[in-house]
Image (cartoon, rainbow, N blue to C red; front, side):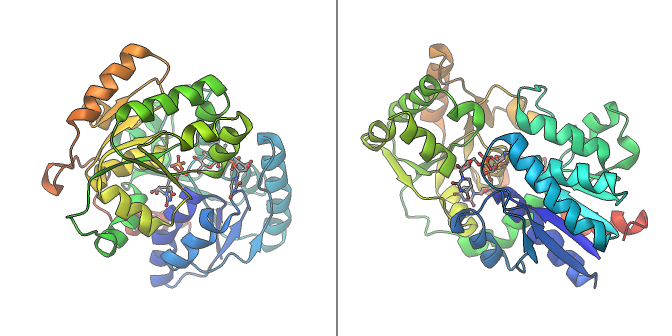
Length: 356
Ligand code: UD1
Ligand code: UDP
């Protein structure tokens, strides 16, 4: 039995291609949901759209502080994994669910495969960095989305366990891109996502992001993460956000609709690791609202421009970048994240290592 441990939005999107690839190869597998994300449009919608079977258990670990959530997920995972001892656990990305899975599975001596291993933002103030480093070092096989991630792992002495498979989110993107394709006569938009702890835990920071949105001038469509909605409301900023004429706030959308939005975008404004990378699949340049080392190839190419919304000169540069941004045709898009067959490479590598 192979057990996938997932719990939040980007993990469901990463799970789909690997689940289907393992199914095609005839492996027995099941899914544990930590419950970290629980709204219908943050969880169920992705299982339905991407044809993933329902998890056999949901641990209800959503909400609360980092420690509470991680601890609750760990206790639930230990109960599940202790008796059934799967031959392999597969973990995804860098969330608290990932960390909980890594700690529990390693203590039970269950081998771990880590999907999306190796990216480093070089700041331990970033909660996801801590989760990712710990998970990489506890895993038995590591799947890298790009060459830089592989290099990072080699530098940390993990090169022996690491494979450059390419980004599994590209597999998912390609599986849906054609179906999602929009009528190109529709107006171009700016698409925004906004949810990181660093951008939602301080009122001034949130106000500066709203100012940036307003200064962009063109229509900005933002499927708003529930965390951000809660924080805007708590800080009394929701009315201000809704009063920005060019700002269209919508509820979080399913993956199909998200891809359709990105395909219409001439620019993506985001603090999401996943969305900033997907911008290169969809053909929209990206303003990244964090001062972290993300997707360094895209930053070097000025596909991604990092902006600090609280720094006037950086904002001026970002507005100029935004003014010039236009939808980029397929043949001119950068290609750093593999060929869209990451899942097949992962299955092959796990077989080679006798992990499955
Ligand atoms: C988490 C991950 C982050 C990832 C993101 C993807 C960690 C540390 N963070 O951040 O790496 O980029 O998921 O979206 O694991 N909430 C709801 N409904 C939901 C989910 C969340 O209302 O379905 C609200 C709750 O108030 C919750 C808050 O959002 O407390 C934050 O959720 P949480 O899962 O802690 O963090 P994310 O910001 O989603
Ligand atoms: N996404 C989505 N609907 C939305 C917002 C994002 O389907 O309303 C997708 C997005 O295209 C990407 C993934 O969710 O595939 C990214 O998740 P998120 O930004 O929550 O997490 P991160 O990548 O920052 O960990």
